[in-house]
Length: 131
Image (cartoon, rainbow, N blue to C red; front, side):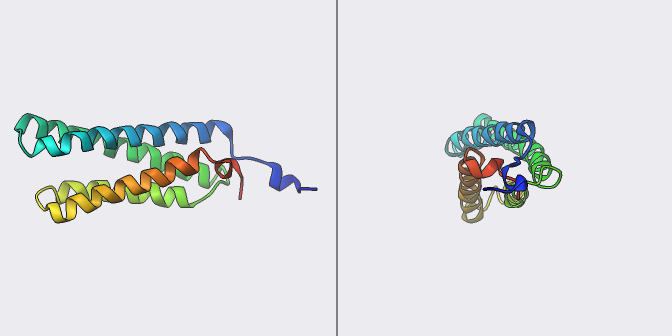
């Protein structure tokens, strides 16, 4: 027999909003990455890559707020809030390392790793469980 605390779940609306933000972040990262290689050869595409990066930052900020809401008042897992903060910080670092491909490319790979982990977690049954 399970305890009442074990059967309670994170508020569905908060979890759904976080899932939407995570999907939007993954889409924004894919769009930014799709322009990355082409940006090296074309100035207009470089500007498009930068604008896509700005969208990544905006979505990361929204995602961070939602992840903190799922964690603190929602009593959900805390690591997605830390991963969302890392996404925001690493995404911002991308702006400072745009000329240093030795840092810019690994940061981009890290962004994809973080968003992949968040995507898998957000759609798993563990995401809805309260801690």
